[in-house]
Image 1: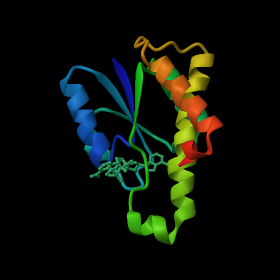
Image 2: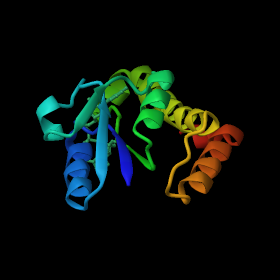
Image 3: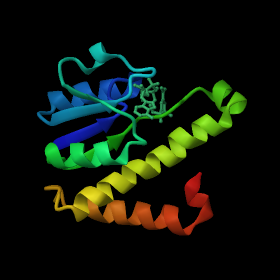
Length: 137
Ligand SMILES: NC(=O)c1ccc[n+]([C@@H]2O[C@H](COP(=O)([O-])OP(=O)(O)OC[C@H]3O[C@@H](n4cnc5c(N)ncnc54)[C@H](O)[C@@H]3O)[C@@H](O)[C@H]2O)c1
């Protein structure tokens, strides 16, 4: 499969990237490198971008013909989330919504993931976080 890994230059994302490559998958990392490192992607393709950039994500999904998305881009410091909750909310909640938007947009623009299981997952997640306030958190 062709897999887009947001946060692929981070701690968990880069470990996942290595494992997925070992399993024979094609992987593209998408990361703004705020806490991640270029070297961590280990020679895999890296798109330097922010998950809030829905258009770039959409274009990336289409260009690489992604079959799946694994989303690890986030701000993770518990301490900072208490000091500056707005930044965490923007990045982690709206950022995730942007990733879901990009997947939907890429689908509408004709990107058809080979892995058919992805569509019901997207539809469920999208419906859920739109219709239920709890879904936002
Ligand atoms: N580290 C752990 O032990 C652990 C355990 C369970 C769950 N998680 C979860 O895994 C995810 C990743 O955590 P981590 O430990 O790898 O953190 P990390 O900081 O090492 O990695 C996050 C990556 O996301 C990138 N990033 C952040 N905001 C971005 C944005 N707006 N656009 C693009 N890239 C962005 C960073 O540059 C970084 O490379 C988080 O959701 C975290 O809660 C981590």
